[in-house]
Every structure is written in structure tokens, then in C-alpha cells.
Length: 339
Ligand code: KG4
Ligand code: ZN
Image (cartoon, rainbow, N blue to C red):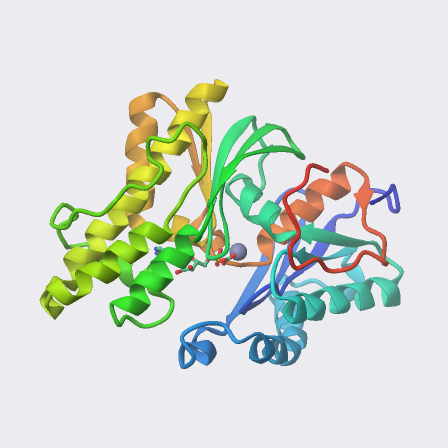
């Protein structure tokens, strides 16, 4: 990180290309989201049952320029008015990350404006607090690649309390969806089918529910669904979805609230793709109210991958006078770090 390149930038243009969404956003220093464009590649990868890295990066290359134009036009902002350029630098697929990072650096160099490298996980982490100051809190991030519980003491200072020891929550949703023959990605499909089904019909394990740590494990749950398959008929699928989903939520809610209680935090936040899940939102709303905790859920538009969350982290950095060096490389395995 280098410090103090420019005085108070007003507008950041942010790019997110860590996996299979190409996204561009323009964020103002007041926390206004002037544009947020997301071009999903789900249809492209659905035929393979998962994301194919080379296909993803080629699509980022063709999508990025038109998306930047659209974002500028929707925000009614001229390219020259952008004060800084940000991109997701990791974690993610190397060839996908390179596209966004190269584009952001090229724009920064050609305009002689600052560049900001942003951690994708920090984007998810702070997305429930878009446009507001980040309070001391317990944050659950549940995405396709990660499941982590983080203690936020002050902005830019994070302590990882626990994470998954095997599959991420979203990954478990997607794998179970595949086992049940549902279209990719399984998460939204399971959410939809479970909405009117019986969550107590099938007994599934709540792995590590009682363990003293804040880690998670979802691969045993996925295996339990696999063993269940020969015993069910197609009409049972919605109840399997609801029962599986409830097992995931029991663990997520219980560990998050226990972390809040143990650390004395009164604020809980939930973000990442799985936080779109309606049952998750209902369970956290209910349980936090019962425990007298304030809940920040990411806006549904900011749950799955987007560039707005990257722009907001960049803006927080700028306010703290922190900028990235142009030599900063991508890191597919980047961990969450305090600034
Ligand atoms: O945060 P995200 O867009 O990408 C990663 O950074 O991984 O999360 C994608 C994950 C996928 O696993 C997807 O199935 C899951 O979020 N997801 C959901 C729902 N919507 C997306 N899982 C459960 N219920 C949903 N409604
Ligand atoms: Zn993500």
C-alpha cells in the first residue's frame, strides 16, 4: 500500500472479475451507488455444471469494455471525472482476476490516477454496511467459495474467528442441487423449492454445531443427502431441499450468535451469495430480534458478486489515505487481511 496519492477522490470506478460475473460499478465518496452493472455468465457455464476458468476469462474480456461504457452512461459521468480505479485482486480464478486488474491498472496509468487493489472477501464483508460507517460487529460471510465468521473491532481491522474446514455453504448448496438434478447453481433452486416444503421431514446432520470453535463443515451434510437419494421419489425433492437448508441455517445462526455473545458484540451482519437465501434472512431476522442484536443483511443486489462492494471498500481505503502500487499482483489465494 502507498499513501496519500490524491486529495479526496470523489468517484471510484470499480471492476469485479474474480469468477463468473463481470461487474462494473461507480461509487461516490458519500456512498452513493451511481451505477452497478453485472453481466452474469451462469447460462454459459450451466452446460458444464460449474465454472470453466478459460471460458470465464474470455467472456470477461469481451464484456468489460461495453459494461464500463454502460456504467458511465447510467451514472451520467464522463470517464475524465473518475478519480480512482479499483479491481478485485483475489481470491478467485487467476485468469479471471487478471482481466479486471489489468483493465483497472491500464485506466489508472492512462489517466495518471490512483489504483486500488481490493480483496473480494472484504467486499462481501463490508457490503451490509454500504454507505454507512462500519460498526464493531460479528460478520458472517457465506458465499460459493467461503464461509467465515469475522470479528470487526474497528473499520479495516478484522479477526478471523472461524471458517469452513471443507465445503463452503454455497458450494454445499450447489453440490446438493447437482445431486438432486437441479439446474446450476443449486443455491437459488433449493431456496425456491424449499419455500413451500417441509423442513422437518428428513433428518440431516448439523456438523460441528456443538464444537467449541467457530469452524464449519458441510461435506458430511452433502454426503447424507447423497445416501438419502436411493430412498426418495421425485416428489420428495422439495422436502429434501427444505430439510437440507434448515440444517445449514441451524449451524450458521447458532455459531454466529454464539460468536456475538462471546465477544460482547451487539451487531451482526451477513453477506455473500448465500445471504440471498430467504430462509437465511428470515432465521437471522427472527433470532437476532430474540437476542436483542441489531442485524445488517446485505441488500439482495449486493449479496452475489458485484463491483459495488469493491468500489465501497476502495472508497473506505481512499478515505484512510491508502492506495495500491501498480506493481501489486493478483493473488488467487488472497486471505482476508486488516489494512
Ligand atoms: O458470493 P457469490 O456470488 O460468489 C462467490 O464469491 O462465491 O456466491 C455464489 C453462491 C453460489 O454457491 C450460489 O448457489 C449461492 O451463492 N446462492 C444461494 C442463493 N443465491 C445464491 N444459496 C442459497 N440460496 C440462495 N437464494
Ligand atoms: Zn463472491
